[in-house]
Image 1 (tube, rainbow, N blue to C red):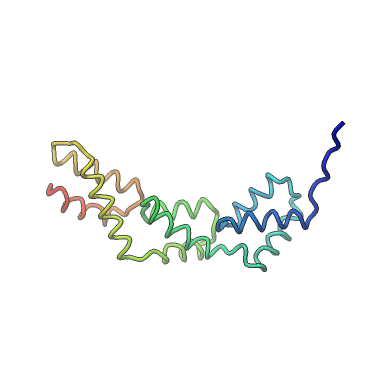
Image 2 (cartoon, one colour):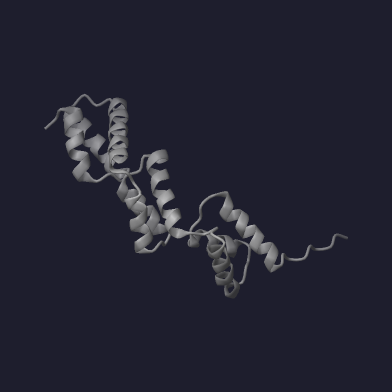
Length: 160
């Protein structure tokens, strides 16, 4: 008969959480979800969070900045979609704003233009109005601001 392994003690749990945070940048809500999956009692969770913050494994402003820049570069998301993603992570308004400020305006505009050009080339619409609207809808769904999208789409499609 096989004996049951003893549940991990607090030091083992803390080490597991350190590894979880070291693997990639995390926010508090992701860490809390992990602790719930590990069945860590609620009354101990704040102590673990405090320890990880003091050891610099957990830093929400750093997370927000990295999240915003990586979503822009890797997924070509616009500011609105990035903001929604940060909001869903339950970050403070300060961290959310810090994340959005980390986005370089020139790089943002370049990614918007490249994304628009690539999508425009893939659309097979002959009617320039339909082409323009489909392109604009796509970019707005990606989270780019309409006030940036419409002038760009008009310039790319030539449809006024």
